[in-house]
Image (cartoon, rainbow, N blue to C red; front, side, top):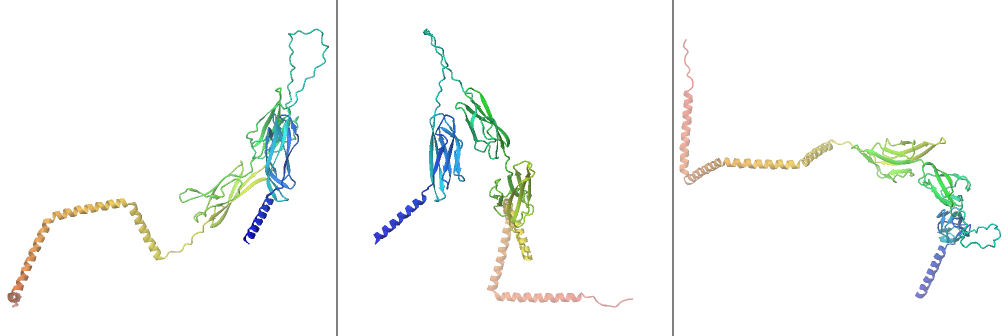
Length: 467
């Protein structure tokens, strides 16, 4: 039973693998054809790259012993494309093509390649014709006479056989007898890819004025020098367009409480052809106004900024309009939008009397604490100084008053001794003590009676009045 299950699983796995292999096989095709199978050195010919009618692909090209006008062809919207190739000096030209080709009908794709060879045939030298000569004289010429070789006349052909520009089409259509052409290119083009093929294999070509094209008109010259040194000049007037109107720089910021600029980070980072942005972090509710710095890439462009002066809680939209009148009387315009989000203002609840008192004490405490923190070193120094002065003062005081202190201690000891003696006498002879006390009481009473008599005698005596 286990063997049957294993066999079934193996068969199912093989079927799945075969199915996957079949789905990845591409029926796409890629072919190369040339207008000539043999060419002369320096001769130009056409190369056609093709895919099937239901196919599309991006193809890379290369050539040995030859120069292609393009090394990449896009066959997405068309099934074939023809470019030119200039032959080298000798040998065989091998043109190779490779790339990913997809078949829409079978919904498959795969990497395809193709190649084509063209033979470079050297021209056969022409033998000069010998004009009619008179009959050979019977007299044998002198053996000292030397025969000079016939001189071959150098070519004066300084024409082009083909002129192609990869970035556009020249006007008028090329003709070797027409020496001046024109072409318009977008602002992104700063250099032309020119293929200029001389009509004669020994003629040379030099191109000037094609580096760093400026906005506006540029003169590009193609000088063809023939074998004998004679020249012809083909002129191309290249008009490079103005850049598309847009912002060149953009920054947005606010002024903080220290009167410093704080820039707001935008998402995504500013790029001239991106027209919508937003801030990464919410702004504080204290921010009421924003400032925008923006510059355009064209002179005389007008920049209008709307929505940056009164920032409210929540989302705010700032609009930046860039406008510039053009030659036709209409107006070019680009609009950038920035979404800014701000925090809500906090709700303020009136403080109660207790909270106000508490805040007041907190403020006083914070002030004292701050003052102590700021002057901590001074406080420690002052406390050490006071402690030192107090210690010195007490030391002087105790040293000065030590004798008085000793006398006081002696008197206290004497008083304590007398008190102890009296207590001891009372304890030993209580009756004598009582008798003495009675005698002292009688004496005190007699003394009080004597004082009373004296007071009575001292009263004024009343008598008669004598007239």
